[in-house]
Amino acid sequence: MRECDVCGKKPIVGHNVSHANNRTKRRYLPNLQKVRVLLKTGQVTRMTICTRCIRSGKVVKAPLQRARAL
Image (tube, rainbow, N blue to C red):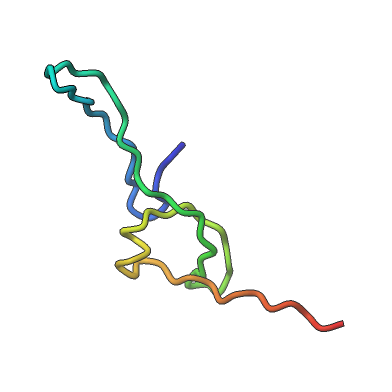
């Protein structure tokens, strides 16, 4: 399901409103990103997080993996 793993933000339901004021149901989806996160235990895991949690610093992005030289 589309849900932020940190804050629990989910899609909400609203309406499209036409010029004639007709209303049809629609869903407003949160802007979720799959991010590699560095946990407090030192582990790196992939989580689905909303952009507001990323921008506010609620999670720490994991450093990039470097390719090993042969």
